[in-house]
Length: 388
Ligand code: SF4
Image (tube, rainbow, N blue to C red; front, side):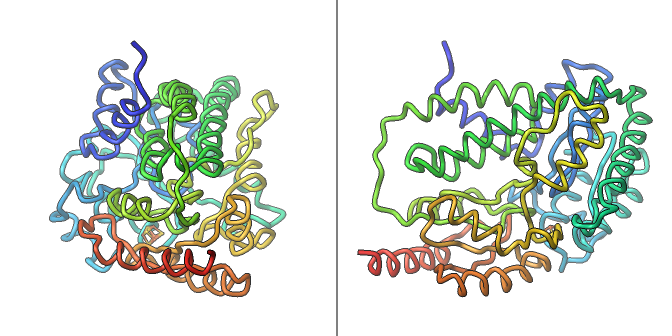
C-alpha cells in the first residue's frame, strides 16, 4: 500500500530529529566500502561527491538533540550554536561515518571549524571550499571551476574513484530533478499554504540532505500530489516570508508556533539545498564549469554570499512580492554576526518599501517559545486589524 503524505512527512521528521543519522548508516550497510562526505552550511555542489559514489550529507547542527559538553573545551562558548553542536555530534561519535568534512569561509566561526575538525579527527579529510567572495567578478567563473576541480581531487583521493564528466552529468540530472521537485513544493506553499504547513515543508526539504537523493526524489514525487489532494480550506491568516534560516536552523517547535498564527508562504530555510534556482545543463562539455556557472548566475541569496549585481535586499523584496506576502519575519541566530548584520540592512529595505516586519532572534536548542508566540501574535493581530 502506498504511504500517505502524513507517513512520508513523519519519516522525514524522524530523520531531521535523529542524531544518529540512521538513513546514512542504513545506506552504508547497503553499500559496504562506500564513503560519506559531510558538508557544513550553506552551499556545497553535492553532485561532485555523488559522481564519485559518495553520499553527501548536510550538516546543519544537532538542534536540541545533544547537550554541548565536549565541544565547549575546543570552541569558545560565544560561538553560534550550530558550529558547536556539529562539533559535539562529531566528538560524541554521531558522525563517525564521515570520510570528508567540508566547510566554507562564510564567517570566522565556520572557517575556523575546519582547523578544529582537522586537529580533533586526524583520520578525516577536513577541507574548506572557497566559494568566490565576489560573485560579480569577471574572474569568478574560472576561479570557481578550478576550486571545484580541487575538491574533486580530494574526493577522488578519499574514495579511490574518478569524478568523470559522464558521472557528473548523471549526478547533475539527479540533483536537477530534486531541485525541480523542491521548487514544486515551494510553489505549493506559496499558492496554497493551507495544504502544506511550514514545518511539513521544512522537514520534507531538510530530509534531502540526510538520505540518498534518488530516494528523496521518489519521496517528493509521492508526497506532492498527496499534499495537493488534501481536503483543507484556507484560513484568515497573515501571509509572511521567514528570512534568516540560511545557516543555523530555528527549532521545529518555533516554526510550529509561527505557523499556528501565520502562513509562512516562503522562506530561506535550508536554502543551500535549493541554492541553484534553475536546471544545470545535463549534457554540457564541461560539467564542473556548468556547476560553477549555475552557482554564479542562477542562484539564491544569503547574508554570507556577496553578489553586487544582485543586492540581497532586492532579492528579499522580490521573494516577498513573488509569494504575495503581506509581511516578513526577519530572524537571525544568536551570535551569528552575518545574520544579525543583515537584519539591519533588510529592516531598512523593508521600511523603505513599506513592508511590515518582525525582527527576531533564535537558537537551535531553545525549547520554550511563549515569548515568540506573544511577539508573533501581537504582530499578526495588529496587521490583520489594519487590513480589514
Ligand atoms: S550561524 Fe552565522 S556565525 Fe554561525 S556558522 Fe552560520 S553564518 Fe557563521
